[in-house]
Length: 551
Image (cartoon, rainbow, N blue to C red; front, top):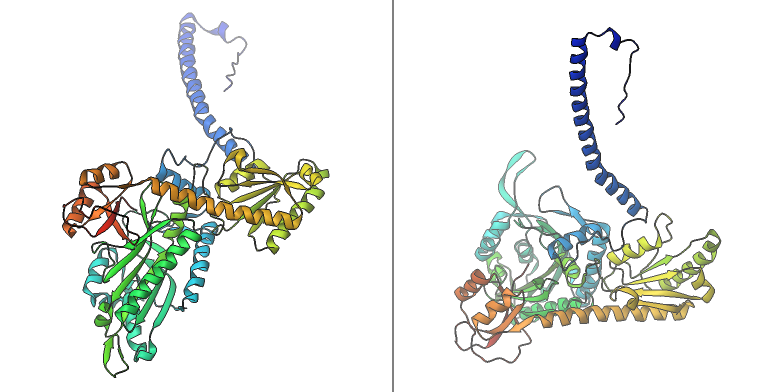
């Protein structure tokens, strides 16, 4: 602020002594007031400077420049895992919060990951004889009440519609939490004879469960999933189907998502409401919590009896069908993020990545543009012809360095860099996302189409295998075998999984959960050798169980 002093000629000469004294007081007061104003203005300017600097910094970042070396938009995973996860979801533009609390808007990059889950699983379902169908989202409340355990298990999570067209409905409608009830309502009409069996259906849909504590992709009020529903003539066929579909999930998790999982049987307490038995695949996340990544339920004839789903067998006798249901949701996307991500952001398995390879041309002079662009377009065409999902980023409003950081954060498995020197030498630079820094860069990779494509395809397979191996090594290093309750408590307190012989009751299982916050994740199919003595009760134990804190 500039202060201007104006002197009127002759003014002081006309003032009396008293007036001059009074004037001096006014001047002093004015100086104090002006000093105060100047101080306030200076303070205001100081407060605005960081904001202005931040705005300029953001503008520079948006333009692909500026910023201190190492400055990140993502909180390091090692500092705060929860904040890291939310930062990755936001900065990688995977999802955003919906206007209704607990909902999320899945953005294109995040939905592309879900489409990857869909495409791989849908193919597997059809290969195993299943057909896609669709059932209504609104279900009469009375349907859920027909199966006592089912309605009791889901009651706290239900969303009800009580008005329609401005009028009260005669019966409340449940917004689909799962579809066993409405599926059985239709199965009872469709199944008449043993010739109608097995009935193997799947649907891709959304479901609503009124969750109190939400987390994008992992737990939301509304989420996307697939749910399979089958009907069989015998209990053995239903059990076989239940296990078969769990193995489909296990194969997808390990060989596509590079997420090592432990397949096993849930305890009675942790089983699906209304099922005879629930099977699960459990994955360890980067913070060592467990994620239930997929489940398959043997429903027995429970829902068939509730809805009268019967068929005439070959002897002409009426029999109840035996059923299975199984599902995987957008929670799988959250699992991929938390299994593989690092301090820089996402690391995506190539078989799941929407973009497997990004090509970044490096052009500093206009004279180099034509040659570099011709080279990168040739590489792009060669990769596309080979079925590789490739993006050529030829935009000019961002610097190459900005692009490197951006695609690293978004988890693109392989990056290709081509500059004028590379064109001269007919070779390029290739960087892999799973190995940070210079160690992950390969120089002098031939740009001849066949050799280049073969190199990139081989590298994608290496990255896929590397991510699976890293995740498996991390998981195995954080599972502790225990022989006493004290050892379990110590393992859980360290954030690890505890594995030990178990013959406890339902109350014993609840006690462990109340005292340690760890739940019984499953009885693994692959049972390790053990003492045969329950680590809690000392009673004979036939099986080993896994305990862990979980999402």
